[in-house]
Length: 298
Image (cartoon, rainbow, N blue to C red; front, side, top):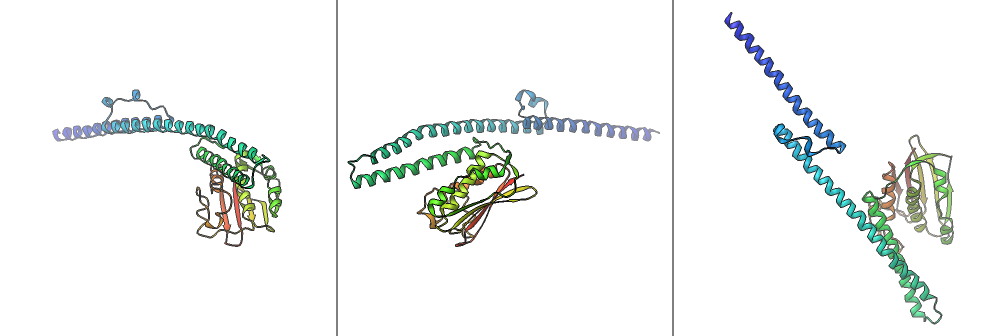
């Protein structure tokens, strides 16, 4: 009888111990879950928890989240500093460069200007124009990379986007045939302004690298989940090893060093399309032109 009572007591103690362990474990897990939820929602605060009330594991989690909160605060501060810096650069450089361009244009209109001086003024104007373009490209790229520029995709007509491309005169001046094939009336989800910029960068390259007598074609293909805009040219083409490099910043093929540009247009185009859930593909071979395909979500 005594042994039965001892056995019952032991079993009861085991059950109570298991219940207490379960309650304690549940409390610890609930505390950690609460910390993580507050951290995700941005409401985590030191006043919510104290080390004296928490287990060692909870205390470690608390210290980790506190460090993460400090790091996040520093990131926001750095991001604000970058915004201010970009704004200052944009403001401080636009006026001097614009003035240089203006003065060189005025200088070239002086009747008494000799041939050599006129040539120098023309070179200054050309270099100032390149500097102006480079600064705009760098500022735009920095804004994209730091999230300062936010694309706002919404339902837009693809045909309106293609009709906004203004390259007919540029192509004609170079002796290149520019053909627009908008296809069926279809909509896609994209930011009209920024997607136009991305597409313009691609078409500009197509016209630039297509020789006189060649053709640039812009056409649309419709899929179930995407609308594809193809920009096909008859230019110099892209080698297989260069296909992975052309979307990186400042990359320029040795074969096009004499052409205008800084090697940033395709990089900006890819970033704009990527931020909208789309992507860009390229098919090409040296001497056979290239086809850049921009996929936009329907």
